[in-house]
Image (tube, rainbow, N blue to C red):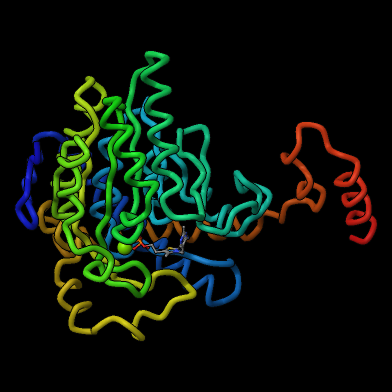
Length: 345
Ligand SMILES: Cc1ncc(C[n+]2csc(CCOP(=O)(O)OP(=O)(O)O)c2C)c(N)n1
Ligand SMILES: [Mg+2]
């Protein structure tokens, strides 16, 4: 039942993805990396509230996102920014959310970056880790019950793999052969807790025990991730049951803008993983020259600058919106609070 149990497998077969798509995949990875750097700078300047980065994990995130089709649903965690981009959300909308402005799809209701993009089946990111997994299984079972096409993908981390919700979700999904793919990004750390202190076993080995397919993949090889996730989604869509994909990767940056990994993480470990950075690896796989790499970089930076400018110029949400979307009919005490707040404003 376990498809690949080697410590890491790199089975990139570009056959599944046209060359032009591979170039687009690389550009999206680079766009995500540059958004990450820009977001940290904006947070340090006090222009946005918070940021959780995906530096080092672009291969796992973008590679898997490229395997999705229009009918699929995604229940992401907080690092899958690029998933929204791949689903067709323009860069500026990520920044609208980070600025919590009036054009933010959730007008500042979540801690950034916890997006929600209903129109592309990108379900609101949950703050409590692991919440999204039973939700994804429920959505997959609903698809099954309604006879709707497509599958569901959900993401979580190595630390989150210790949560009960994960096991409940996977057990039910396997029992019901629900069309869902679980992507565990094992990035070595759950804030300051290393994976070895999180679990005595290997995460992917839980799959056969719970009755799922299990695949471990080199998460820094975007094409390998794409292939493994495309196969898992195909299996899910065609009634073959759920899969747990463990993508072995590494968080090169801090956990969030409130974290300082130099306090707990050995520099040598970081340096070893920098050498396995998924971005140059993908550029090498495409045979890109230095000039070509520089051209893509300049292009994504321009896109980001335009997006930041537009987000900055967009006004904040109106005060009254704070009281919307909570109750179908506003109760008297909320109405009274709204009146008072608007008077004081
Ligand atoms: C239920 C719950 N417990 C604790 C937290 C605090 N918390 C936020 S992120 C995080 C670490 C999660 O690590 P992992 O699953 O490995 O994901 P990563 O951050 O490495 O992507 C923790 C403990 C939370 N948000 N929710
Ligand atoms: Mg982790």
